[in-house]
Image 1 (cartoon, helix red, strand yellow):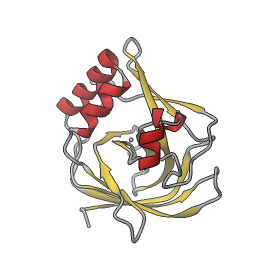
Image 2 (cartoon, rainbow, N blue to C red):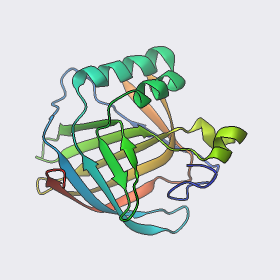
Image 3 (cartoon, one colour):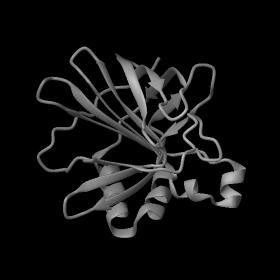
Image 4 (cartoon, rainbow, N blue to C red):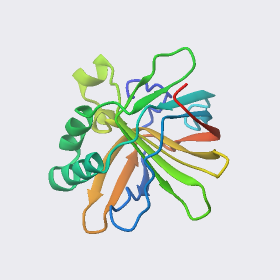
Length: 197
């Protein structure tokens, strides 16, 4: 989906490379599901900040949306992906208690062999006026990317790349997520519940 000062404080110019599969349309079981809510605790190793974070999913992205984003990234690159993502209807919100937060633009989940699920969210991240006008290196990291796993009971852990750059390799059907921070923000004690409340 952050850089004069990011919402989670990830303003360090070292880079961690994270490679995630943004699942191939063939051979991967996807669940579309119903609205869902996730509560978690975040730990930002970069700043020492901790606290609660919530994600509310009002709908899951369609296969057509996923395919369109894939093709845009592979054929046209990150800037075109950013524009395409911004044009998509919201799938929910990510926020901390007492804040408005911001819209998520992509939400995908897939069933795991053990009965759990792997979940990915992506969105364009809000940038400050300073960041937009001065174009520091962080402006090249315009996405927020969330990825976590939950078990059968809806409990799990994962990570947030608050300010991320996204590139893709079509031959391998892989998405490379490069985090602007030294380490992604950790998500712990994730609890899922059905419904959007």
